Image (cartoon, rainbow over all chains, first blue to last red; front, side, top):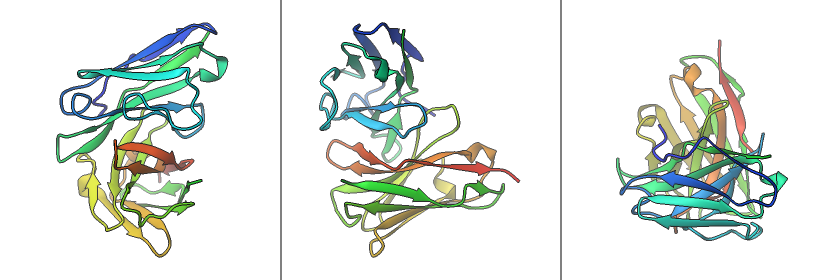
Length: 111
Length: 120
């Protein structure tokens, strides 16, 4: 069902920089802003990045987003133990009368 | 601070209808700046967008669920609801309600989620 493709896992040691990719198509990432969500174990997803690279109030500036063409990326700089979570990209998709689509999800492990 | 809270049965029998309500506090479902959305997550799996409803009652459903879905909004109670008919075990999931901001289409506030199990 997921229209956006992410790597299943990523890892790093504390302090490292980790990058997560999100690949889509012209009807979603290519045409609309990308959002990123963080889901800590047992909790609801939390908005991390919206409009490709904007951080909601309270989100540390260690998290940054970018977009190019039909792909997007989330970078976590200065990785911390509390960043261990599942991360999902998402975007509006203009096909099939419009729908919101999520990525397949990436599990980040802090070694 | 906007808060959303899902409520409804945690167990539904196969072939019956799953019904959930989301109560919004700290904000109004009557605002034209937002769509009121449902998302689900099967155990151990990823997120699936179910659909949204606006304050006026206009809807947009996931095509894969459209034939079984009905959403409604009650502005007097500041609530919106979901009904999914003819459920099977594949509909077992944590169901989240969330607010979708129309500008730049992003889900900015989420409920805590409620697990609905389909089983006889």
